[in-house]
Length: 358
Image (tube, rainbow, N blue to C red):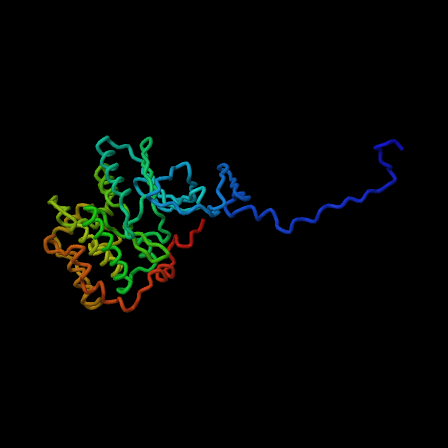
């Protein structure tokens, strides 16, 4: 037999090393990232992390200023309006969820500057009762705003489920909204101008936060289609409708109407034929200016709640209490001993977004 040749009659028995007890899956995260030591690889590229850095990067904060549109993946549309959409998006590296509001508009230079000014206010707002704005972009006629994601939807979504909100929970909700208004009015000197159930967002932690301050009002004034923004006019104070000067007390009027709607399940200024609705926005506006101020039915609600609503919806803004004054109203503390759990209430109500059906 020549050197190096094999005898075909000899059967070789090959043995392989025992399989690794830990499968390949140990190197994959749920998001599909391959991780081995300090190496992270996914479809968006390669990243080296130090051994001292945790496997998951820390959550991005609004002050970090490190978000851009290329770093987020769209999950689904969670809201639609006449001027644009709101999408649920996820950051590629951290896995953090955000809400991306995209406004498609062809706007004039003056309107663009006005919106930019409001976006700067959004960017600087740091309050636990106001939805955080992380980053804003303007490109090719579209404004994209990356916002804090509130997984419970809006107060309007909640009302569709529960129809009415009991007083104790309403007091807890109102307290958070008032703290948000207190921040906007007295620290930032901002008038919201569009306070309504769809602009009050909730989450699974029981938090209630104000969103869309300023931007919606500017959008309405530049659209040229007033009937598209009836929702904005619904909660507008009499002095604003009349074209008179107004201040932050106009937001207090809106708060009063929101509370009444949540308590009774019906918007305070409803036409006689509710199925048909108002023939025009001007009829609604005339009703707000001409009709007596609305009130909470005394036979259905506590005197404290009725008094609180009355303090909000005085037709003369001079007679309305400020957010600071309302914080000391008896209604704000009458249910404190009950230790109201808004988190459980929101979850049990079955908010349409709380389960995050992706």
